[in-house]
Image 1 (cartoon, rainbow, N blue to C red):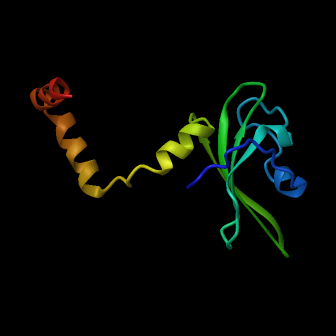
Image 2 (cartoon, rainbow, N blue to C red):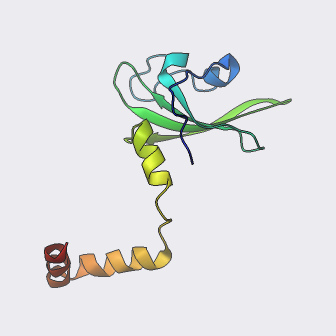
Length: 118
């Protein structure tokens, strides 16, 4: 995912109204709170990063407009706009990665030996 080089507020008022306020402090969002992570050039809709100007918590949201209306799905995150871009370029976490971490956390000696290596 390539992030836009310049900050641009999200100007589509119907989509912003789909996520009208912060889930933490209930402060209203405005267009200046929202950055575009991915334009919805396909049926998936737009991917937005919304940061509350009051409590500074963030939401990543997928917003889709259709003839039936506007729908959105949000995910609370502690990632800022730049971090989302950085992590989106990382390789996906595999099932084997999860199992390796689980095994590592079960064995203190193995965990500390791995920590000493890095």
